[in-house]
Length: 199
Image (cartoon, rainbow, N blue to C red; front, side, top):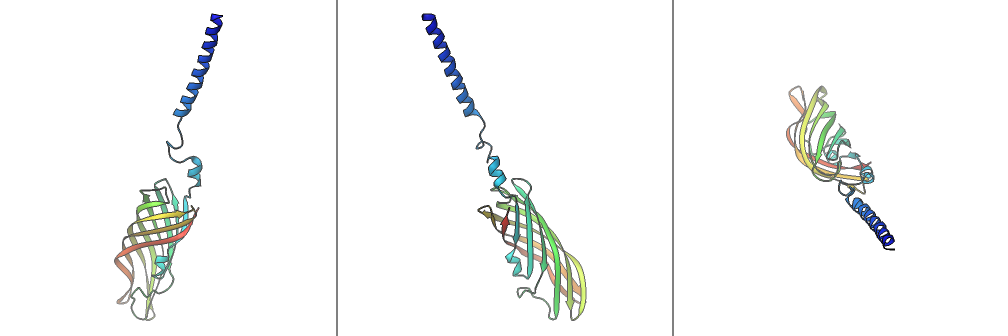
């Protein structure tokens, strides 16, 4: 009788230890909280954006940007643009006109959030074809620009992209038509105001 009690007690203890070890292993198992968002959360986060820049339109420039995250903390983008109309904010010689088309490209490094959302800083470079006309005389040139901007991007409901940035740029998008220079050259503020979609 005593031996049977010992066996039963041993079986009960073994079962209790097995159950305890199972709970301990489950508690020690890595969780998605320990290593960041779950794969479902990561896959649900947009990695691409397509935006327009209403701020550039004040200067007569229509600009569209495509951005793609290449890691959780960085993204690359390309932004073709065209000078679509004459802006009253730009001072040009009388009887002159300017036509320009170009593309900017750059990298953004994110300090917060997950690319392409968060607070960022990044360099930008660009090339443009510029054609000027003064009193019927025409000339053309290849221009360039480089800039550094600091800003932030918010993805509303992971669908709507709202972004703003401020920095400084050096622009040389000017053409000499005879003795007259048409276009922009020198240091200028760099402003980004973007609105679009994320996917």
